[in-house]
Image (cartoon, rainbow, N blue to C red; front, side, top):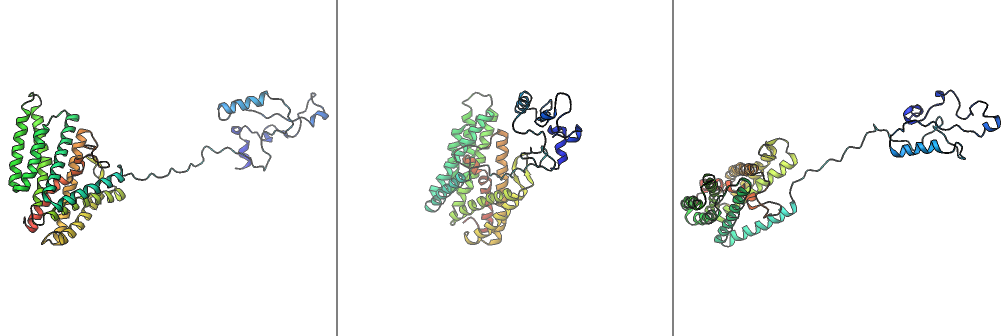
Amino acid sequence: MNDSSWGTPQTGYWGPSDHGQDWGAAPAGPAYDAHNAQHTRPMPIVPDVPEHGGDQDADRGAARLSGPPFRDEPTRARPLPGEVPQNPEPMSDAPQPAPAPQKKSAGRDLGAAIGVGVGLGVVIVASLFVVKAVFVGVVAVAVVVGLWELTSRLRERKGIKAPLVPLALGGAAMVAAGYARGAEGAWVAMALTTLAVLVWRMTAPPEGYLKDVTAGVFAAFYVPFLATFVAMMLTADDGPWRVLTFLLLTVVSDTGAYAVGWRFGRTKLAPRISPGKTREGLLGAVAFAMAAGALCMQFLIDDGIWWQGLLLGLAVAASATLGDLGESMIKRDLGIKDMGTLLPGHGGIMDRLDSLLPTAPVVWLLLVLFVGSG
């Protein structure tokens, strides 16, 4: 900082030219003689209003005005020409350091999510390749828990009382019928579950009957009926490998969408439904699923061909994304983030089934078209 800046009134320092006299000389007048002039020093000029207006500066100014006019140590109101101040105050307009950029957050506890995901994978794979009936039981349990979460949120947020008892019993029966009797058994069980919902709700007052049974029929179709296609995949000779392909492709699609969208996502896919999803993430889901589909069809599925896996992966990426958006729409309508809290880092069972349920009939149908149902 140059010397002239110290001569502005803002700092409280005044230059020699402001008063036309030398700071080292004593003021002239009869009250001073030559002997006393050499021992007399001028008092610093203190502005009426402190520079910063703070209590601390006001106290200092008062101390200077009330203190003795003479002190043993020399007092200067401004530095000498060419002298650098020892403790200059920082300029108010000095550039401030830029804030450190914030890292993107995944929004969930990744450690818990990975641990729970690995644990579920072990249970599913073990039951899938040991005893098929055990895997069907795992699917039935997941369906019942999913129905409980869905009907609970409907009751809490919308006052819709979809009857859980007929839905849970009919849902478990629907999965078992799909495994034992195929598509025909699944449709019959769906029809009977719908009838049970209509009759069960008649035991309550008629107010809200229509919305309650409508929600019940929707829940029966959305959760257990779509899950029956997983059980029907299992009936083929290479059924465990078909189910494993279905699970792998859905998980890989979700992982690709998350990884690419988190790193490169810029353009929102459906901001009114799910602001976190991007078009770049969708491209990542398609690329990852198609690559995994080609490998699975070539090495896991009997008589499968790699190019069929490309089509299968593309279809899985589309259906999984639509399923995820569909449940996001439901949760937005309900005003909730997750359907439940059963799975740490994931939310509830329905938060994991959102992309699996609509993908199951797509994979089942394409596998039947490509390699048959046997």
